[in-house]
Structures are given as structure tokens and as C-alpha cells.
Amino acid sequence: PPVGAIRSRTLNETRRSLSPKCGPSRYMERAAAEANNASTRSANVRVMSAFAVLREFFQARGTFTEAELALAESLFVPRTLRSGDFLQRAGDVSQFVAFVAEGLLRSYSIDDKGNEHIVQFAAETYWLGDSASLTTGAPSQFFIQALEDSDLLLLDKSGHERGMSIPGYAEGFRMGVL
Image (cartoon, rainbow, N blue to C red; front, side, top):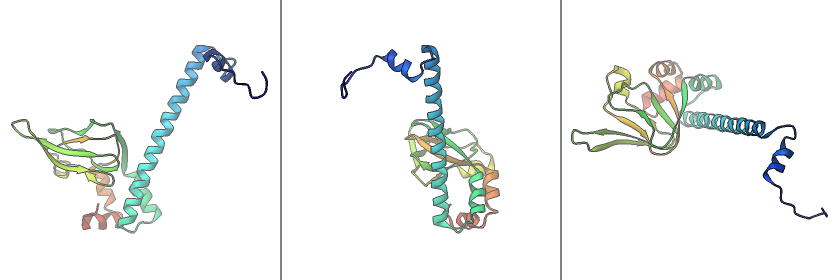
């Protein structure tokens, strides 16, 4: 074709040009693997981003060395909730408190008449959990639900106790900013 001419390609020509030795099934396997890799990369970026938000949160509220920040980050478990997903349901014993790196959660209870009562909303950089249930092991009265897709960092009871050995974390907790 002349220079500058536009020629449309069929789907099969495009597939062959991308992978001349691959048949359609190999092409689909390769495309699926690339999509999976992209999804994994996206999840890794979200986790790294969540830890960056946590690090910024800590640094704005206390003094931490790099080693202390690394230790603090190691105490958290990343978790993504989709809109409508539950972190906790009433009647379950709370296992974690959540740091919201991105998204929006709500905590609520349901009364005997079936009415919902919202206790708290937690947006980015807020903490949400039932600390009474977490510390005593008693069943929680609260549901915790994502209102938006949310990236969380979860901290369990033992992680919090280990965090108290970090001076900046302990000070922030005593002051009520963590």
C-alpha cells in the first residue's frame, strides 16, 4: 500500500501479527495471562499505595525512624472490599481494626424492629473496628460494610500489642490520634 494509506486489519490478522506461531487457543491463553499479570500489578500498586497512605498518616502524627515505619507496616494485612462487601457482621467476634487507605466504610447495628442505626462512617485515613469485641472476644453488635470499593489495612490484636513497642505508635495511640 502507498505511504500513508490506511488499511484495516481483521481480528485474525491482528492475532497472527501479535504471535505468528500461536494458534487461537494459545493467543487466548497468552491474553488471559497478560490480563492476570495486569490485575496482579494493579493489586500490588493498590497495596503499595495503601501502605504509602499509612506511612504518611503515621509521619503526620508522630516521629518514626525508617525501621519503626517498616515494623509498623509489617503488622498490617492488606484487604480490598468491593462496594457492599462486609468486613464484619453482627454476632461475629471482631478480628481486626481497619485503617481505610481508600474508600468508605460504615459501621451500623440493626435493632429488634429491623431498623439500621449507623454508628460511624470511615473515609480515607480513618480507623474503624469494634475494639470492645476485639479485646474481650465477645461477639460484636456491629456490621462493618464497604459503601465504596475500599483498600484497607487490617490490624489484629497481637499486631496492635506489638505496635505499642514503637514509641511513635504508642504515643499516637495514647493521644487518641491512632
